[in-house]
Image 1 (tube, helix red, strand yellow):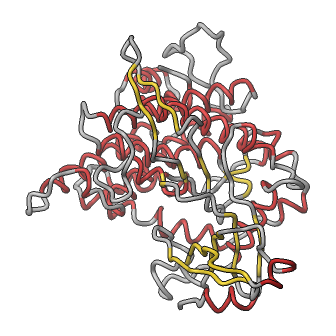
Image 2: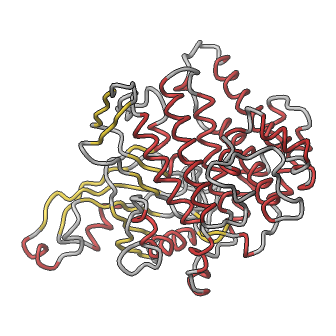
Image 3: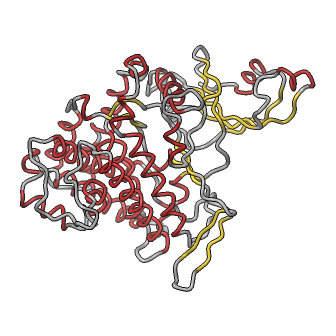
Length: 446
């Protein structure tokens, strides 16, 4: 199913003419940018969208747009996104201050047409996705390789925004009626089919030992029901393709002590968070963050060791982890392992009790992180990260190492919560190089 965006705009905004440009990267919807070409004299007085030079339009077909009718998908997802953006849009959205506090952009909801299944959103500008920013040789990859300072700034602000979004006070501020606006039972089955059931097959493809048992760990975790006290308001599908950043016209210079100083035309970099179709009460650190960090972890594994790309990816991960964990600690999030003094370092002995919410949440974070590493190692295209030999061997080696890393997380989660937080396993988690990314996020361990 296609959609005639030109005809739709002519119908609802006949006072203006628009040039429609289809945008790449959307999986579940058809998305375009409409740029205003001209306005009629009468339209300037009373036409819709007078104050907008460009718009983003999203049409939700009754299936996953990238897969076609063989993958039906409830259009309720668009109501969910409209409700989420309404909460975050000024001036009346109850959550509009969250992005402002950390200078993060969330597109304003301009118009929602439930009958035509079209959303019209604010255009945040010609920004890069974080996936593009962290991928070498991308056609849109135009930034300097010396943007260490910029990546740290992006990470700190993004971590703060996500911690605030996931805080208990954010979800508590919503009325029961607002929360009902995010119910979409079909989402559960979509995620089960797309992200849980393929795990056994993917592990077997790369001859991972105990593939069936590890897949069972994933399936059991997916079926867990977390109490309301352990839920957060979430993006629901947070990954590097849903985060936008400015990546051009930056000035990077070296100071006398060798540090990189980065400015963005004299201003700080722009950061946007888009695609809220899966938003609502859900898993914060063990959902949104575990998934985002899986994609970041894959970019780190793919980047050449010792390269500047590897370094900026590492800096970005560490900045998000540190900012998110510290903010969550100050907010006394239920999953925080220990309330440490500022100068105190976490030791391997400070594991949460096996019966605690923290233990259950941290283990679930490990499992989802491993699951999403495996899925996206195989389903995403990583060819830009290696020189093609013509045999496919380079790709096979890279993807195999990614799948093995995902399997490590599933093994580290063990079969029970008690085993996960046992003294022996916790010491292993605190010292293992493979687990350092998630342990930094979850415990503050550096």
